[in-house]
Image 1 (cartoon, rainbow, N blue to C red):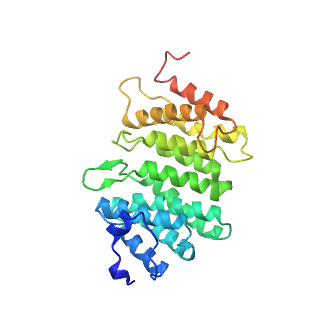
Image 2 (cartoon, rainbow, N blue to C red):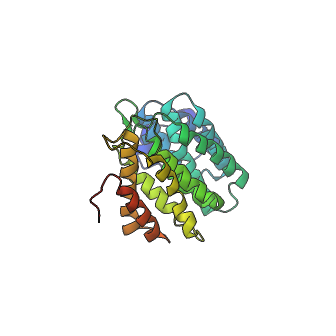
Image 3 (tube, rainbow, N blue to C red):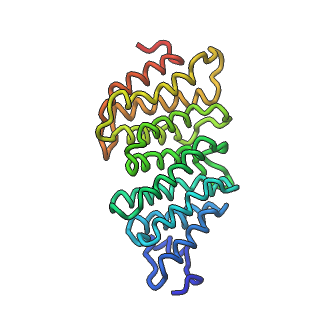
Length: 272
């Protein structure tokens, strides 16, 4: 099959069977290009869905690092949809790399992490949805990637907890979480807290970022960033109490939940 004859609509409709006779490198290159598209059907329904499935199935093992490198360069792309889908691709690449040790060199993961962490704090367009572009979800997609990085780089776990805290307390925003961004952040934090060997002071230390952000907050109307922070803390408390279906309740969940509840008494002064 010639790459020019790939009918992505048909492949998607059939559940993404891997096309026989087409080099993985050419398919990966085309899907990567489509991931920049402003058309949400091309970008999300075809490109991302296809690349995620074929990475998981191992079809792209030979080009996995190249896919990660391309995604990492997108963090400085001028178009928001290109930036916000990059962490999703990295999430798939990292998950596959964790499943097959040695497939992705650690130095590559560290390089991707440096670009990701810079972007995650700096991204200004944090809308979850755009009527023209479809899903953007910088906060949610970044949270998913943060959890994947925590498994690939366990020595970065406390840094990743603080990164999520700085994202949730970012004050230069006029976007109020409306597409479950708080839940995606809470899930990521809960996954990172699952890291074996994490000490209690490491599990709770990142909350000092939140304490500092909330220190001296005015008693009047809550600014958008504070609402986002409180929503995330509420969601985190629920996740720590109920646990994750696939991973359960993390160590030190009680200690983290108590700290989160103490912070929630800032807006909810009536809590026992």
